[in-house]
Amino acid sequence: MAFGIAMDLGLGPLPITQVPEVVLYKLITAFFCFTFIVLLATYLLPQKIHYALAWASVGLDVLFAVSLVTISHATESVFLFGLPLAVLGGAALLERPGALIAAGLCSAFVVVISLLDAGILTFDLEPWTVAWLRELGIRELPKTGFEIVVQAAVLMAALLGTALLSSQLVIELNRARQRAVTERRELAALRVRYEDVWSSLPDGLATIARDGQVRTANPAFLRILGLETQQVVDQSLKTLLPELDWDPIMPVQTVEIPRSSQTEELSRDDIAGDEQIIAMRGEILRDADGRPTGESLLLIRDVTKIRQREREHLNRERLATVGAMAMAIAHEIRNPLASISGSIQMLNVDDNADDEDRRLMDIAIRETENLSAWIGEFLDYAKPGSVTMESFDMLELIQDTLAAMEKDPLVTDANVDLRIRINCEDGGIRGDRKALSALVWNLLRNATDAVLEVDRRIVEVHVTAEPDELCIVVADSGRGIDPQEREHLFEPFYTTRVKGTGLGLATVARVVQAHKGTVDVGEAALGGAVFTVKIPRNRRKEGSAHRSAS
Image (tube, rainbow, N blue to C red; front, side, top):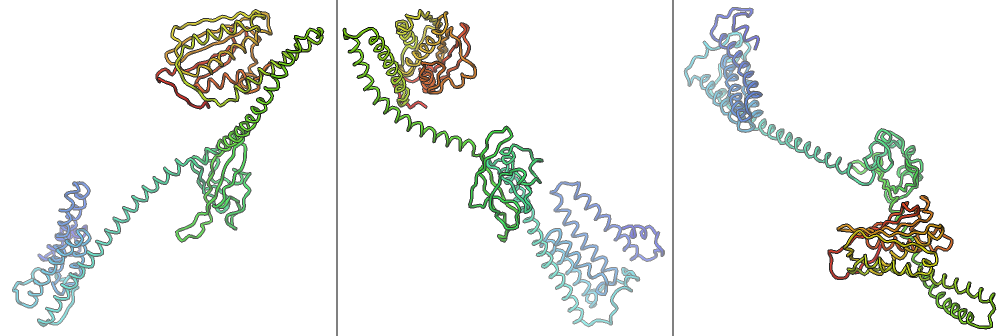
């Protein structure tokens, strides 16, 4: 373009004296200027204008090629290759329509210059021919009519062939480009989906290189090991899990991880020092041809809680077996125990028995009664925890239980002061009456047993109510309970007293759990222990229902 502008302005090495030369230089300048304008418009104007600009560009290419051939001696021009180039430009911009239109226009031009060459059309191109361009052309002897027809046919066939082949090539290239764009989008979507799955898997995944280094690890893998990314990636698996002890899945590997058909477990200490059980499985990574790549995929899962639940379930089954056996033994013991107690009582009324014999028989009767009471508590606790729901007044039940406790010889003989404060009027509740009665009785019995060890013997019951729950507080003036013993207080057979059975508070806990309530123990203002029980009212349901306690 710079050359055309310079020559157009008369700045070239030779003076411009001929009209064709002026036309040539103006043509060059106009072509490049228009091309620049089209490119600039393509970036600045809306996309809907681009189609029209493409057609304008194809027309410009054809016009420039035709003009260049015309001023360089037509059929003998050295620039005849410009015609197929214009066709290629049309195919590149507009695919087959552009290529065929450009080929048609160029073919029409070939027909015109062929007719001029044959003398059929009388138009003198000599004044429009640049002399030095003509010198570059092909110099031939005068052509015959047949040669002119053959040359025209060859040129037109070349243009048509160029249009068909180039347009087909452009169409295939555009299809390939579109497929590439689609594949890139699908690959990007697949990558996002893969990263989502990789990150959201609950099981830990890590890729292990041939040398045993961890290449990648998902968040679950880091969470299970309790480490950060920089502490895992590019680190040796043997360093991260020194407990690994499996046969290698590939002979060339230096790190041993389990085969894909194996699931191994290892026990290790986590960061907090607690036991952690990890299940592991390995998989060989393969390429598209199914050949091993040298890398492996390691899958880990924290099964600590699962194994703990399995142990607990096994322990419960064992305890259930032992409990069933213990109930059978208790039943067998209870009957002869009653016979022994009755026989001793018969001997005790014998007038021939002296004071020493009566004292020993009183001891035997008292111990058999204690043993019988312990067996009764054990059998009550060991019964299946079925709950029969009914609606009743809990305040009335508490008052009746307290009245029965006041008549107990243990309470009357020890002068235990039983107090009750009720700060509510509505004691309606829905629950198992018998079980809740046992709950209140065991709380009162535990409190009265506690105050027997001190001189100030006070047991206080405080009842409050909320719209959805009932709160029962039993406090005593005993010695209290050591904080270290509180966590074991509701375990079966755990007791802090010499004559305790360890089943009273365990029964309380089971009844509370069956009613989906809560029980807490703390220090009472009286100086001893305070037990706070909260039981849901569950008054929305009518009728009776049965369910198994946990």
